[in-house]
Length: 287
Image (tube, rainbow, N blue to C red; front, side):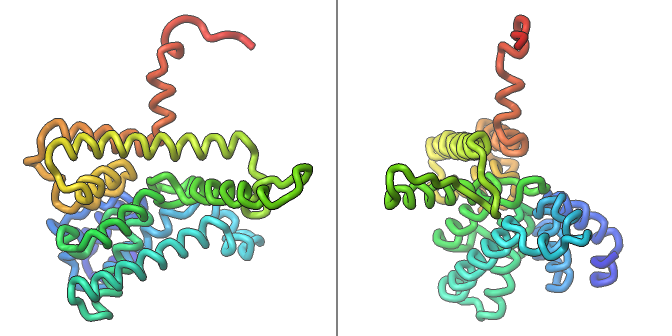
């Protein structure tokens, strides 16, 4: 209803809101949201993607008596901080490298920053025209993605925070007495060993899939940065493209991107469990 009131186009609103809340990024326009003239409509749609990229359980907390706890949620603050950082980097790139006026650069940068971090995949400009520095910023943003328990893709902010906290603890322990006990914490909660293990394994597998897929694209002669952009976009289920993905792309590369999207959506481990032969052959051991 909000997008309908702002844009005056009910069918456009239905199409794009459904794509936004699921961070799907599908658009009924040839050039995504670049074909929508109103920035109000553009940001109304991408703001819904932002809502979809938050932990869905967070809404239960926010709309309860513990709303103050909800607005200080670690992943919420991390998501907003990540969007702010990538927006700053893209603004500077668009202003100095593409010659955009700063207000225009900020508008495109904020939109693209929200789109890449939430893994929504909407765009307001031709990404093949941006420089490699901007592409790298978007790649990192897409790779990290949104929150655990959201509709967003990527390795997820929570897992990145766990990795960073673990690195911090390792460094801190180096300066402590040998008998000191120091457990990694996040958001006031002690991180369990199994939780850390799952996060690190997922990150490792995710990066492994990207590297293998990237290598296949490099063998076909694509520019390294453009190839990495397409692979990360597919693996993080974003859908942004610098122009490589098209109907004319070699069939093998289409299959690679399809596999990347499947692995990224299922977060790899789930598919590996399904393909694990002992789950299909023989009887499972009784404990």
